[in-house]
Amino acid sequence: MVKKFDEEALAAHIAVHEAESHRLDRIEEKLDKLADAMIALARAEEKIATLQDDHQNLYSRINLISTRLDSLGAEIKENARTVNLINRITYTTFVAVIGTLLANWLHLF
Image (cartoon, rainbow, N blue to C red):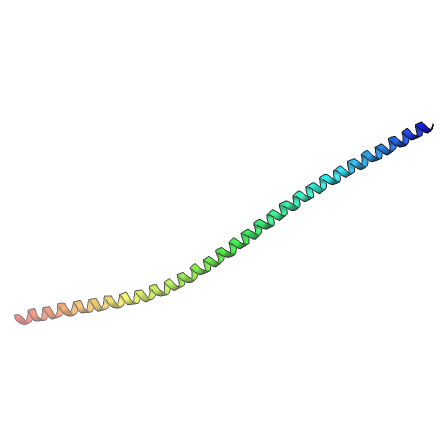
């Protein structure tokens, strides 16, 4: 009877051990999945940080381009006034020369 009790106790102990082993295997699998998820999360955070840096760089470049465009707009207005003034002076000089030549030509007759 002692031998049978020992076999039953041993069988019960083995069953408990297998159940605990199976339980520990499931826990390990869950921990592995959790570790994989944490790694994926860390990679996603790195990508987000990189995208934020890129966004900041692009934002700075766009602001610089906007400033340059504003500056070019002011220069274009100034150049347009200068060209307009030069055109007026040229036309006035041309009209004066034509008028003088015409007056001298008419004075000859």
